[in-house]
Length: 545
Image (tube, rainbow, N blue to C red; front, side):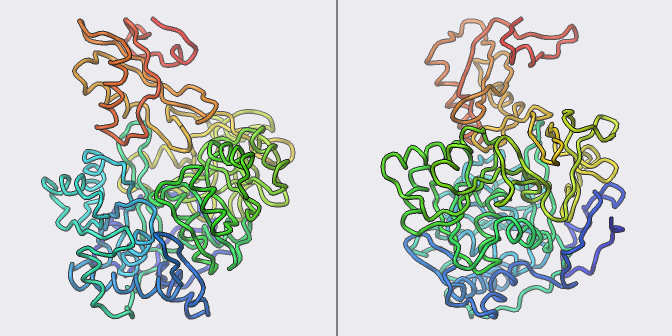
């Protein structure tokens, strides 16, 4: 393992580097086979450098009624970069938030901000003002780029922010009619990108954690290329003819890798959908002859039903399943019906992307697979001692990427003795494959989304009719798990279907709608210990007070 050190920085604003964890709290990093120049800008490598390699006329982006080549994407992002630097004063190291659904304009904005040397924070459209405010405050974000169709929450956030001084609209549709678009049209197509270091922070990936208090994971320019040069090159074996499709939001590191970084690194194309339900995924695969799909098992089930109705998915050569555990029956049915591999894997925002996976020539049901090149994993007990094959314990992993939280004491919980502890319980078989057992904490994973139970509880408790509540995850055939709330109402309130709807709508208005409780059970009291701590395990087993 390497001794920690940092190369030179090109950041004028030193906020991010100043808030990296102490070296003693970093995980061990093994960078063997992942060597990059001292000065590196990931966005340049994904666009300008690809044009120089001869990919200028290759299709890079498919979406909003157009196919854009690598040359067009390079020019587009360079124009926006000029605008950010010249008109809005963005300097290397400033934090820039981007708020958008999956569309070509979001990718152009991400590339442009990265070329300027900004530290980018991608966010989902579903986040509410309160959630955005926490992110803005923690990262001290000065500039935000937002699809003009969803500006309201961000504008509201900026009103009382100490840091957010610019909320700039861009047009996520094919019209390109917004403040940022109009200014950028006047700019030259060549841009001298910031001279960023390979160890400069390029991306902050926010993850809620079980407390609901956001944590920001810090990823360097080299990290963005490592996930492509490892997983995408070795496991997916990406070629320029590939067309990527999928449902994960680009705001998530899983989506940013799978739908942006991986295709652009190898001269391939990505077909984007703002609403990527199974039906839309089928359509875009058929229309664009998609070859690599990223989505959750829930969607693959629905896609196989579509095949029964005559859908043609024959162009797919790989189906990547992540975000939730892949049930063996889904894997087996997919293999039987398509003859193509379905690759289960596990990643984490802290690790940036997938670090354990099945591969095209080594995959089997009910297994998460083996570590990606450069990573090593083991199963440990509470004392960090390695457990024997078959024993369930904590998953510990280390490799070329790893957890670095932005100024957060929880760094010491995630990293112990140089290993990243992902919060998952696993076991390893005699052949070295890893198998998922359970989450080690109170995080609920539903249809690929991580939902912090305490955050949903806080949203419910903000309603006047709720006296007490506890949130758990319960198994669900379609979504893996769903959020279930056990609610004690205030005196005089009626626990009926109307109240269920009222509380569900309330939660959707307070936090991101996908976090709402799909089941609500009313009870007279919650099971508690003698000290008053709610016993959620009794709710999971069907018990009450």
